[in-house]
Image (cartoon, rainbow, N blue to C red; front, top):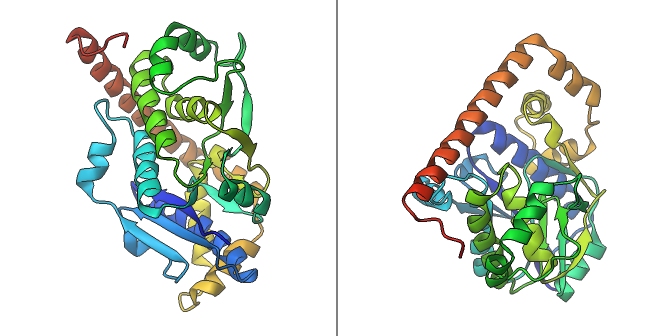
Length: 308
């Protein structure tokens, strides 16, 4: 059977490395349980020491310089994902599935894996909906306004316009043109969209729907994005209950079988001290967005933004 790589991007601090570790271990348990040799895990990371050591896991170190360059002209953090996946496609040469770190695997989606190996299909986590007057109307208007420029960057599917969740991106081997298109579309739309929060996801959706039959991953992967602050605290508690001497396979079994405690996460969410920290995090995020706004304004004033 053709090899398939599941790709993680882990950078930016301990909380992201811990989430990546947990997701990898839940996946590793399933691979070991089924004695799979057709799937490998690849981790692009700025902290290789945080990645579990196992023969099924390949580590690709990222240094400060490339990570800074990957953010691009407007210092857009989500651009790093597009750059890393472009690099992974080039380096690995197989069907790929990128997975966000704030996830845990519940089962192996073999029908999806088979479709990616066969070619002609792109998998993203879930289809969020069709753009309309009530769902991303500004994004729909932007596509209409910049239709010619987007067409030059590989966007041909405009009806329907769909938003797919980019917590998962699965592509066949040889998807270099797809990743180049998604990057070009994201770079073009970022200074022209408002709000900018979903630019990378929208660019991937546009590029994917223009090239592939679309497929949801869905239930095999739990994406707990709604606990972005609480989950790292919770995972630290789970890791604290592990024996430091356990081999990686035992760690993987523990992480897969642990009962995910939504009640504990809600307790953390309701705690006053955590509410205060979430507000501080939101404030820092707002500053980062305003910095992008300033860079866009300077680009516009200098004439670097054109309709092309």
